Length: 323
Length: 268
Image 1 (cartoon, rainbow over the protein chains, first blue to last red):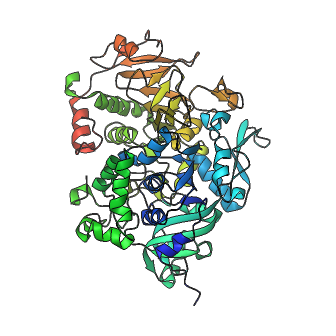
Image 2 (cartoon, rainbow over the protein chains, first blue to last red):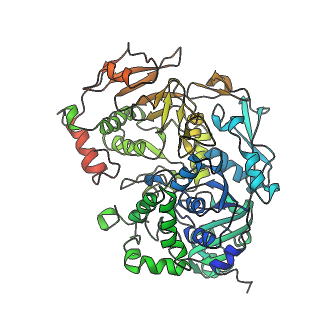
Image 3 (cartoon, chains in turn blue, purple):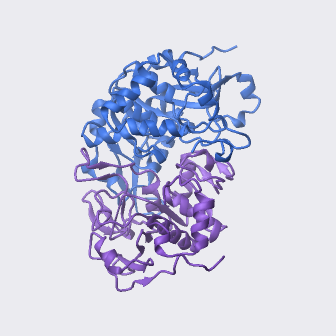
């Protein structure tokens, strides 16, 4: 049998260094690695560069003082408003942000996955994403530990020499030190099975130097390998596997559980102020020693109310789903 | 559908915006729309129930032909997955756009200007210390660049409907040519598409074929052109404005009882 990649959450997060560029799987409140992020705050990571999107998982890092810069395309907690810590820090001039487009992000990860230095697209033409005055990439690069993972410039315009599509933007590959994905199932060697949206995970893992998978369930590789077409991340791209049940709470995990709406509302309310965030973090991060402590504090009854009901991948409101 | 009308005092401005937007989507029955998060999603669900059952919903989080059975509360609510034809990831959700296969994009935002450019990134004059930081680009850039046309929804207020957006997220008719950043017509950059309609809480705005500037096409019942002028941040053309047909009792009933019975979107 090949070597098992299973480690504890603490061990996995210890592999992240200050100044690392990190990418999180999932989007908005779908499959966000919340358990991993809370552990990053406990371990007091500093000057991280967040790539991709900044919803609750990234927002906790902002509040926890772990983030030096954010380079991405979407900083919202969906129905619960703009990511509150990012909003506050940005409006106080305390956080470096470099905006890119959503297709930019997809194509940058695709380029990285394919081993190409850049990709050509018409995305962002005509918009302020290409405004040199708003180009914070040099500042992001300054903070990043692995400078070679960030491109020398944000983009390059050129005329399409092949199909006469006019001006196109050359957009550089997006690479990172660490990619963390929270998924439904992973095998001990790192094979991953995702349900619901794959978001960017199936691209992003290939452009990362280190990949940490946190999974609702660790199952046997043999079980996942009976049906390889249903797997989205190969064991060959994964370095560490952590079992973290309910590891995306208060977000959703398709076929496992739905969003914890009161918890998300409470988070948004608290994080409107610095003191509020500290209070929230004291309750849910610092005073709970680990993920098990976080789950104990939530309590089984609360979690049970979130469980998805087949055939839906969520909990229908008519069947007790939260409102 | 019953032809019974309701009076303006019997619905909220947000409900009016969503209902008139749903009516406008009648033009897209059988067509493919890439739908943004928030009220566009609500208007789309209402439109599919009343006016365009064959409209096909795409989302930037990777669903093709999504058919949610309950109202989703975000762009990656699990409710969008169940019942869709295909669920991949964000890249596959956006590639139909960049292949120019999407007939219309439907978005909200924080500001819209007279050329239909939309801002969803920040409000203020300092990018590094904004007055108000917003969600960012997400699909809003890509919809504006690649969809065959764009429809925008936004509350009609002086600070939102402006001469020029603080940050140009979604390209309208006059866009910025880099590296200088001067305004040019989008065709000059080889961009197709462009905004066709802006549905607000007061009326429906379109764009002049020649000047590409916004004008008032329809004014909602109980609203005057003076109201629209007073709530617009530039001197808007109201010469072509006519009155919208009143809202039907059935439209309000379906929106309240079947689309958002729990008032999740706080439209009322």
